[in-house]
Amino acid sequence: MEDIGYPHGCERQEKAVAQSQSSSNDEFQPSKLGTKEYWDHAYERELQSFYDSGDVGEIWFGEESMDRIITWLEMQKISKDVALLDIGTGNGVFLIELAKSGFTNLTGIDNSSTAVELAKAIAEKEEVMSLKLQVADFLHPFPKLSQYDICIDKGTFDAISLSPDHPAEKRSLYQQSLHSVLKEGGMFLITSCNWTKEELVNHFSEGFEMLQELPTPKFQFGGKIGNSVTALVFRRK
Ligand SMILES: C[S@@+](CC[C@H](N)C(=O)[O-])C[C@H]1O[C@@H](n2cnc3c(N)ncnc32)[C@H](O)[C@@H]1O
Image 1 (tube, rainbow, N blue to C red):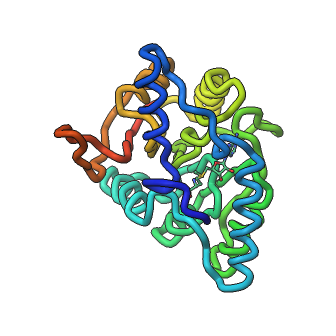
Image 2 (image 1 turned 180 degrees about the horizontal axis):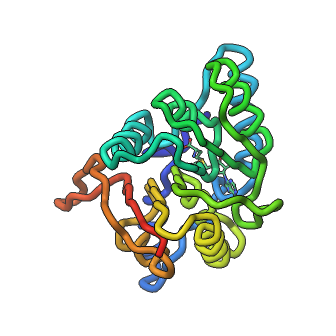
């Protein structure tokens, strides 16, 4: 995948610029990362590159983002047959890592059919045959998705938030969809580089409670220390 900024396509800086221009701006600058066309093209390139060289492409937020979540699941002693959904699974590498860690009931959806084709090709090469991989738009799931104990989002809510059209409406659809696919008491683990902890807690205040913030790398800028990536665990009420 092409280099589209730091970290891994994060457009927090664009938001900072937008906010410095308008004190009431709660939106990002719309970006190509918020369009389906962008992801279709990106995965077409990644699929070609996978067939040419075996390169699986971008691991969004890096390997450590997968390790962080797997460690959390293991520390909570989450049963290995828990029904888990990866929202916007991309190349599916995270699900493959979960399968290698022993998880057996894994589903990934993505609205880019090329992403799902790539995920299936990588899973086959890795001889991980148990994944359920489907093309589906999380904002308008059809057919209806079943219910899950755990939902994971690594960069998908960020991408949706960068949509050039109706981003606020899309965030609200996301929250509603998440509430309907997650079982009562189920866990939602989100990793974001575009939203702070406070902003995420606010987005998911209806129907969810934050349980835990997972430690992520910190950076220093202008004398202030912040996190370049936010990783939170929510529980569906
Ligand atoms: C930043 S990438 C992250 C991919 C993957 N989660 C990872 O960690 O590598 C965002 C993903 O969300 C997918 N996506 C965006 N909008 C979506 C939607 N409405 N429904 C399902 N997937 C979506 C994109 O196609 C892309 O694969």
